[in-house]
View 1 (cartoon, rainbow, N blue to C red):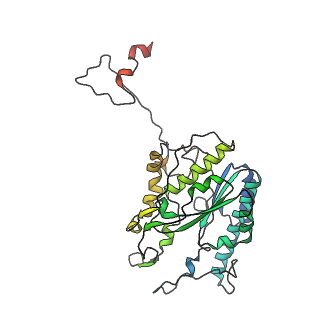
View 2 (cartoon, helix red, strand yellow):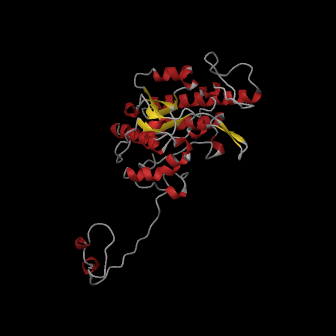
View 3 (cartoon, rainbow, N blue to C red):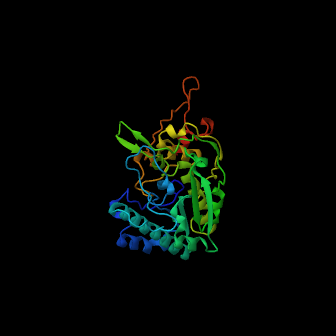
Length: 318
């Protein structure tokens, strides 16, 4: 959003430990601000909600255990203290996300929520009630259509109908049958879970959601911004070998190239203070020395436009 021109406030425990949304006082702080945000994008942590926990991991001596099932979406009975705390914290985040979305919607502003297609999030009563509202839409897409490495089904639901353009109902990519298989890394001496690599949005998806959200905001008179052309998803092709790449290569490291592809300049620090330094617009002072007499044989013009159209030095000084 900041790359398009929005002033953005990010709420993430990874950025600031004081932003722990499982704490009631922190929740109340942001619920009070819900009506002021013209557009909100909400991504609820899915580590306790994903059904991937129900898959067995051959050879793993202590695999992650299921925390929920269809009859116990709030948490399985008999969980140990640690797993019960995880489930309870997940419940708090789900309920907060939905309550926040309700308040944004009731204020007439835009809100977009994202969660995996196979998430228990969809079974929470408050979520079902929210998407039943007449102004809400819901869709699915495949992350690999937005440069993700693996075939991962995702779901978006929002009161902004523009997001329907993001839908990719089918995956036509070639994928490795082992792309989701956890493995033990001897060097790190720990198990590696591919699902962790796919948790973060790709740069392509982030810009796509920002563009559609901005289109909605402009249509409803919320902002005046220039909207870049819409990114088209790639629903077919090959993703073989992509799982071996650095996940950041299509995420954080791809933000600046994707922005340049869309004709966008880097954001200013005042818009979003949490970005890496290399992503901010640099403060550049340019000095140009222009000769009194131009010599075609020994001089080369490097700059904007054409040299022949530039105003002569004496005319500019006058």
